[in-house]
Image 1 (cartoon, rainbow, N blue to C red):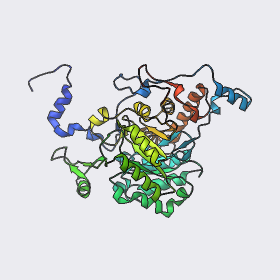
Image 2: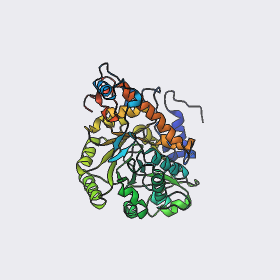
Image 3: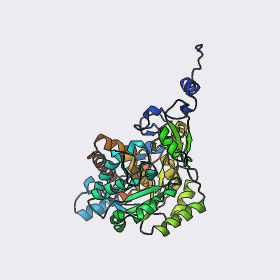
Image 4: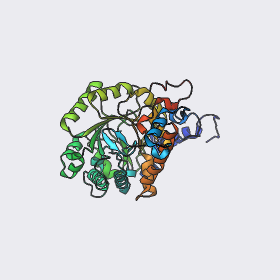
Amino acid sequence: MTGLSAPGFPQEAVRRRARVGAEAVFPDRAGYGATMFGRSCSPGLSEDVADLLDAARLVPPVFMPLRLEKLIDLGREPLHTDVDLRSTVGGFESALPLYVSAFGSTRVASGDLGLAASRQAGRLGIPMVIGENIVLTSGYRGAAAPGLLDRILAYAQASESEAVGGVVVQQSTDDADAEVWNLVYSDPRVQPLLQSGRLGFELKTGQGAKPGLGGMTLLGAEGAARASSQYTIESVFGESADQFLRSGSPGTFTAEILARQIQLMRNNFPRARVWVKLHPARDLALAAETAWRAGADAVTVDGAESGTGWAPTAFIQQVGLPLGECLLDARAEGRPLLASGRMWEGSRVVKSLALGARAAGLGRAALLAVDEDPEAGLERLVESIALELRLLISALGKYRAADVCAEDVRLPRGVGDCSTP
């Protein structure tokens, strides 16, 4: 090198591309299998990475008629401990306005952490989504690693009540041929969930961290050879690398195709709840409206700040709408909208409820919690969020999660119209 420099230009990023080529499109693969990738962003960071939910403020009023109603009902001044967090989440009764989001087939969740999350979600009485491609990567009943059925049974056996919670099994275009939903729906071991109304299926049209793309994983040579008949396999890391990029199809949807698929789900699996997962798209409002009209029990929107097992860096940082903008665009107006995207504490959950969501999904936070303590980490995380929810909702003069609405949140000036989310 000659010492050539270009101040103000991303020199090191350009030089890395010059050194490693296509590999530079992705995060450092040394972290694959042990890292949950996603947009770096948290309150207090620079404005260019802080999203609308971070910038929004919850604003309690002076006059609180619902607090007066609660006072009369209780015969005393109400406290935050009087807030009722029970919620209806996508057709399931839930102990809290929370659910555990899909972890997909990421290696991070393919082992005991996935089982630990299932058991703790079952004990908490909150719904849990099991991500796509589990059957293809770990099997229906896994031998070397827990499979789909293991995750479902871990949840069901840990449940302390048949009145709350539920398991939602996700399927995408890639694993439609495996007839995952048929396997689950007809399995006698899953019947207790089905008979108690706690089984659902989720049609995945995309995800927040890589909108417009299908699933991606890194495979060794043997795994790549096995998968080559079904997926695109690329050696983007150089001929000498021992890892290969596996890419799945995102599927093809129009409004008619989406509506017909939902109708088929309702016809073929009449006792299961039907969820639809949307990526943070520019036509989100039309897609959500299409899903609701076709009979979906819930539409889940995954904001661009959501986590992922593996995705190109440009998609993680630059593609798709942040969750707050998704919620404004969707205009749920009382219909069942669920939200996920960097959820880990109570204020972000309450802001999402105020902008029209019925519940918020825990993804990376849930996995980190069970990694910290496989026995009770998720339960303690949810305990902390529940206390924050009660404190925040009572400060707004309300005592049910369902009463939180647009009047409770103030967006930055010039952004949206928070009076009509």
